[in-house]
Image (cartoon, rainbow, N blue to C red; front, side):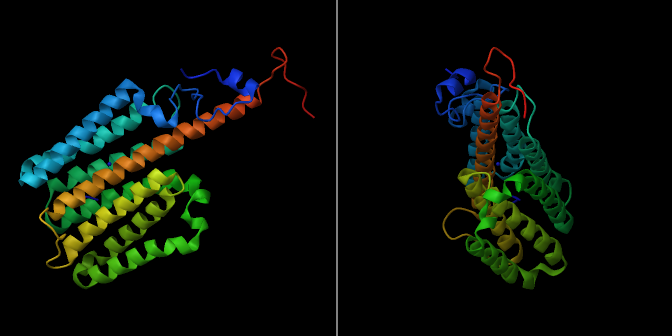
Length: 281
């Protein structure tokens, strides 16, 4: 919420009994998890995202606020383009579609607040990023059985972080306290659910949580600033961009892995006796 993210034939692999999850492609011809960005359009989109992110962060360091504002409008569309082209060629899964929705709301959260000022601008930002967190949570919900929800003790740091943040910000939040608390709960839920996708997405969700915590502290704690020579705005955007990028990388890896496993499952159940299926019991 920033303001100042030789494929092989599957039949032959299955017949030889080899491990195929890391070597077969999806029906949509998506590459294996470690190489999905080898598709030229996805690699170009990722490179453009990295370059624009570097320009944006450099603008913060140089105090070029107008350049920082303009470049912020385009980073999420580029990240969404990475997801779009990396998953082209077949029907996109719910995980991917909800991710694109989340990135769309993130873009609105980055840009729409510039049309207003004061509390209206802040609430506009919170509203769009709340929708983004809900979209991410919907994307990650089917993976909840593999998330930290299975390990309640590991959830304690997330709960403590949320509780401390609310306690520190509440005395100065005034009428914004309720919407900020609702957003904080949804953000924390998203971060927890992201751990069910894979480790990369879980790290991305945690970094996203840190980014928004910095925003809340800067907005509601008088005199708060990140220690050091770099501005709080720089750290907010660095963690925001890193968190969103890691979420996308984790999501794409999970999507390709799930597709490979689905292909393997379909191959294993395919008829092998001249194309005739065995009679069912």
